[in-house]
Length: 96
Image: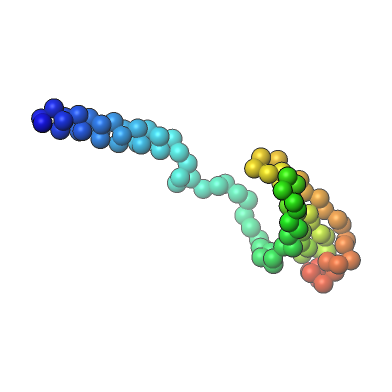
């Protein structure tokens, strides 16, 4: 029975060490080092849901009268952005 306690203590210590080593190099406490944000556009985007195998598309107007289209391909890191300058449908969102 004494041997089982030693084995359990060794396993527990090993798990604590593995978790400590695994999270020791992580970036949990670091900030993202993003640029400062002057204004934020929280208006909802219009989302076009495509059939399986095709990337969905989201679109919205920025505060300058331009329309932005954003998509990404599945779970991969690749993303696409397209901007239509001076889109007439975005005139009402243009800041004066």
